[in-house]
Image (cartoon, rainbow, N blue to C red):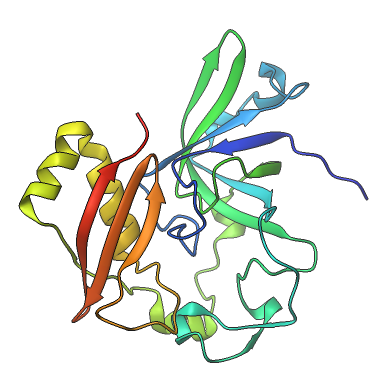
Length: 227
């Protein structure tokens, strides 16, 4: 079976480091799903605005080769689990599935796009299909979450230096909120816990450096590199 993208995702995640580990985890960050021809027509999305949430089927096009066992970051990165018991990107067919909130539809003369929040995808990720999320069939109230249950509420407080925070807000108040969302979920590899190590991340044209100490994220640097 040959599959081709029907659309591409566009957002601030230009680097794999920092992308949320689950969809719907960061509901304030918007992603534009821009349709390719011949799918960029009104007929293809007729009725979609009647839904609040959608399923995205997409490709891990930047992922490494498939593995049968992986080390989930939230388990510390040292415990092996079967790939089919995780959401790891190292999958045989490199397919991802994400539940996202539909915010609005953008209609322009030469572009048709869906604006969604909660997407856990890299900028320029290929989208292979879009389906409506149905609460009466897709939500299972008695579902058991396996080992993921223990870390579902894991978040860290984010600490800014006043001058750094003021500089970011002066350029874009929304970027500060988005960076806090990303960093509060601790993007570090699960096996790294060195309080003196400085981690670096790129997001939406910003270069960020931070440390994690005493279960707090401390932002050391945040500068705009792309204008």
